[in-house]
Length: 176
Image (cartoon, rainbow, N blue to C red; front, side):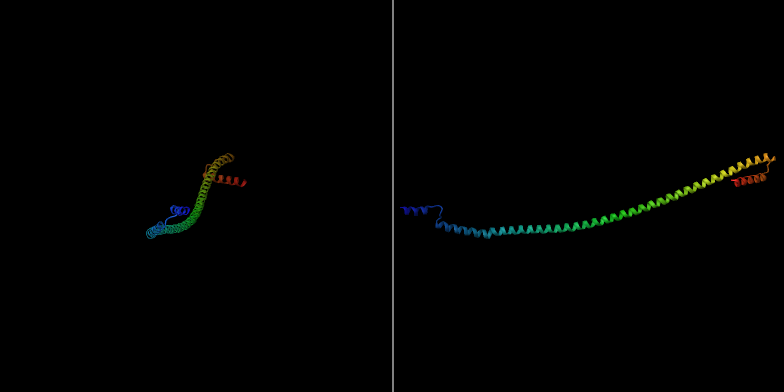
């Protein structure tokens, strides 16, 4: 009994499959493997290939975009450098023009000052001449009056009066 029991127990053990189950399982696994290999795997490979191509295309696009950005950055840098140079040139031209304008204004101011000085000098000279003439006339009339009192005769004659005044003024100028 103990032998039969062990054979019966071995046959009744649920962990060890029967031979028929093994054959049916192997056939089902093979059919499932063939179906998966012929239908599902190509779909996965197709999806994987499409995904790989999309990623590579995206990477290529990103590289092209990065190259385009690099070219744009270089162009921007060149334009910025060019603009800075041009701005410096414009500033220098403005500085030169400003200096020229200042020099022009200075020369005009100096010319105006010289003109005003010349006009003032001429005006002063004219006033001086007028004062000298006025003084001569007053001194002449005083001298004539004084001379007529000293000499005791009237000096009514204009020519005589003029000669006496001129002689008196000459003597005054010599005595200075």
